[in-house]
Image (cartoon, rainbow, N blue to C red; front, side, top):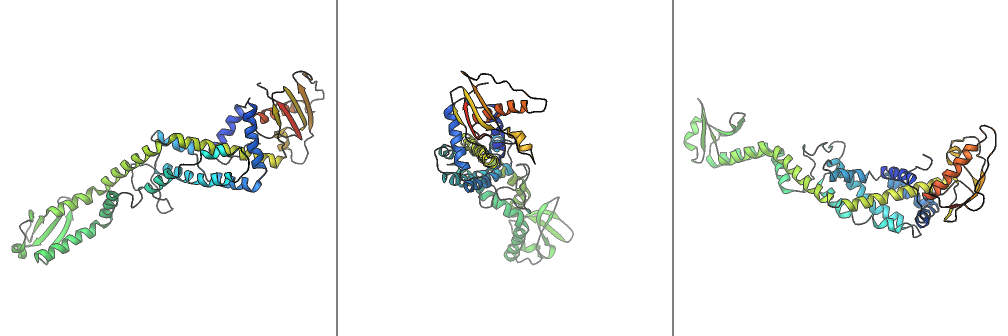
Amino acid sequence: WVLDKTKTAMGHRMIRAWLEQPLCSVAAINRRQDAVAVLAGDSVAREELILTLRRIPDLERLIAKVVYGSANARDMKLLAQGLGELPLLSSQASGLSGRALPPLLQELEGLEDLQQAIDAAIRDEDDEHRLPFTIREGDFIRPGYDEEVDHLRDVLEHGADMVMGIEAREKERTGIKSLKVRYNKVFGYYIEVSKSYYDLVPQDYIRKQTLVNCERFITQELKDLEHEILSAQTRITALEYHLFCRLRDTVADRVRQVQSAADSVARLDVLCSFAAVAVQNNYCRPSVDDSGTIEIKEGRHPVVEAMLKDTLFVPNDTHLGSADNQVSIITGPNMAGKSTYMRQVALIVLMAQIGSFVPAKSAHIGIVDR
């Protein structure tokens, strides 16, 4: 928790992985240290990056849900939101000097079209119009994205107006003033004509039912409209599901690219965390090589130091080497700090080999593998 000031779930997982798998390559360690040094040296740029990182969701988990077919419309929209932040993140990081960050930034580019494709298909969410929990519910495709969906929604919303339109046209065409278009669950939509107007009924009317005072008819146009209105919701839901599956396949095809971008976001997040902690806690950049020597001046235990509130941690030097000073004998009473001193050396070595700065005035760390 001393080192972990990450802002994304991806960064949180990565910093744990780095701590569990420290590096044994001097070049790899130096690349990380170069990036930390750049970020530590520009607090304004680092804070801008951190603000952007806060807005990036868990791209790794989201793209995994897409690939495994368990993503819903909310997940897809959240993925698009995260992808939409990548150009800004890349722009902010590219303004920093040094050679350490450019390789990360390359992975953040080229996903704008995927974000646009998702946003074009999935509508925005607000307090009044929430996206459904499952894609089987429908009502998540953006208006204007698909003509058939728009038409069926129009039928649902304006079905009554369409029925009234047929009634008005039929009155005008036949001259039957008492003509009514009605609906019941048994017959569906039908045209009702009173007996006094039987002689004006057109030949294309199909007799459906005879009552005492009136006759009921249907027309092909009315039956088609009835089928469209009654089946519209089912057809919309099925069509939206089909469109979503097609979009999901498109996104899944870019899984490697999204995963690479997520990895770069996580790395940038961890490096920003290292830089912020280094500045806040006055850490130094250790010199790392294959010398087999450990020389620490005024080293401090990072956790104990962070826990102390009203007392300053007393720093200690360390000199160990594979040729000379192979052993140090540490003496003192109980609670004098012997174990703390040993652990502080181990933690400083570990921190140095994950690319972090260390709690010391200066440190020279020869790579160790145990």
